[in-house]
Image 1 (cartoon, one colour):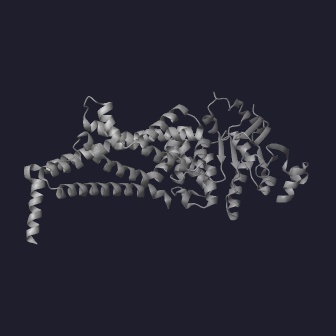
Image 2 (cartoon, chains in turn yellow, brown):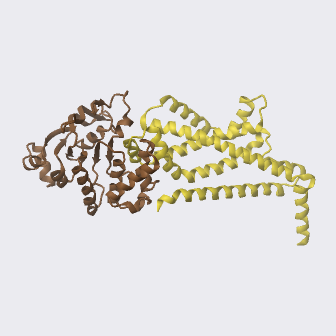
Image 3 (tube, chains in turn green, purple):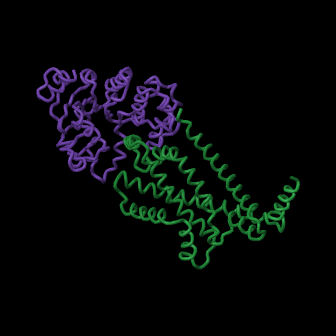
Length: 232
Length: 248
């Protein structure tokens, strides 16, 4: 028993303490968090914009041209693997060697935006049309009706789906290593390649992702509860 | 000088075709005068709701003219949103905003559209809430109210904009029978205070008692109209006679 414990201790030292290898993990975590955060913001912005255009088209028949653009965007992004999108952006669109982290943010932002757009749109379309008519009949124009009346209800309804997409996005950034970006996953892999021990670094990485996701989902739950104050 | 015969809303030859085949309105021309209480009745599918919803362009007519206070509101040059601020509308399903308190429901439009201060909007809202005896519900959410309470709130939400005309689209049809009275009572009071009202309803008692004019619609046309006394006592059209015999 003590023998096994001593062995684990030694492996822990080898993987994380020796040569300050824990720095890989900490720096990788920083990269993962930054990519996730900015991609999320970009995805929210893109998704929101696309959803407004698409649902305006659905409701009023206006914005035909932009609606076609949005449809192309959704089809291409949802129809191809995100790894391929990341590689294309890095090697084809920015072949000059732009900062990898920037490429990753843009790639994941564009990708997540497509999924968030459909989540937002489903939320908008699910709000009863009577709400829309009530807003318009009071004298609100289309956009104000959207912002004051429809969207607050839509956001409340889609929060679980949106939270799910945030979690997916965070875990998807683990493919950043494909463009040699040293994110959390890549950090664990680098340690593995140096110590020839797969167990410790990869399990540590998995554990950190798990903790991040748990924190993220409890934040979303908290927000859901606050928005639900009008339900009872 | 305004007289009691001032035309507030005038529609000319309204046609509405849904999906290229369903003719909901077949050339309706009508004038709504200031201070009138016009009750529109008719069988379902007669176009009465479409007619009402055309008055504030929630339903855009396929052809025809809608003139509100002398302005053609179908003309794209005229801002329909500004005109709608003067036309209150009450829906069958209330359409209160569920994510806002009662007070927020009432003060939203006056604050955002009329640029009233929070205090002014609040005072007016509380005055209206006292009028309908619901001031203790100010900070509740719509889900905590009964149907009749919701509809009374919906009515005063429109009144908070100081409209010149109120449009009612079957305001009591979604209510439990015991709640119909409280809503009709509020509408009756509005009528006595001189509010111009156009009401689509199945409440013949309300039509008899409160209406200044009753309109019968069928097949997308106005088939007959009269004072309530004559309308119910001496219907001329066979379709109206049949309609009244079924519901009275």
